[in-house]
Image 1 (cartoon, rainbow, N blue to C red):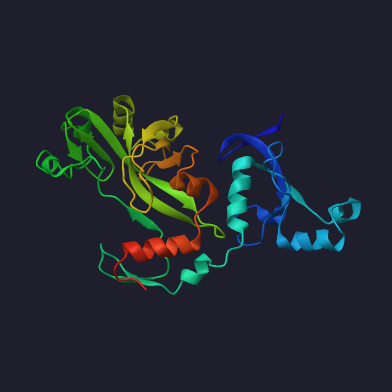
Image 2: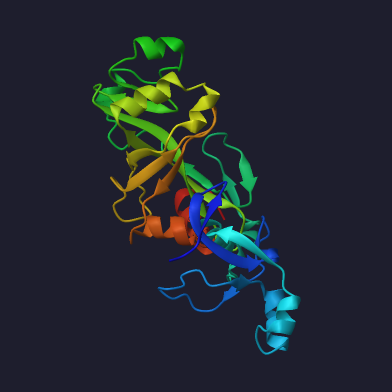
Length: 276
């Protein structure tokens, strides 16, 4: 049975070991390891510089290991390190020269655009606009909210379906950055009302994760509606983070294995008409 470790970021996870160069926010240093197996899905890993030491000594042994400093990570941190340090033919730096025009501010920007989002859940219809749209958050909203309303953070439809806006962070392979989808996720009535009550309460970060169905259709993927997620509530003023359940769906695969810089460029080119 694998040994477990408690991580301040990810909670309990399987213990793993990497060279110290792979920890922190360093990127692009290479990620070397033996082939993972069912019995050892997270084999010890080391950077390209440490690989030179291993090669010079014809493998790891008593002498070569004296030159290696290792660090303990949980399995989630290990996977994030693998994504950050895997070398790719196209990197995020290669997108630095891209120019694009923002549809909100009408200004031109240079560099990669890493945020795309949706103004409303997929289930919000034109007829709902006449009911209530753009409701500002206030204490009165807790006492007498409309049965149907939409603002920047929350949405209710016929007092039956409830949603919140949040972020899906996709780690970019070979970078410390993430690519972010601003999407909507469903909520139970109880969780929805809890979040409304604690909208400005710092203690909301202590709320347990909340189950959610993805409620935005992202056209760059096969059907994304109703993918299973769990919402991790952030401090007041910050959007919740959605964690996808592990599946074979391409969005889930990119959530856990990372998205390439080339894929980011293609999404940019498709979404930004004035880009190049």
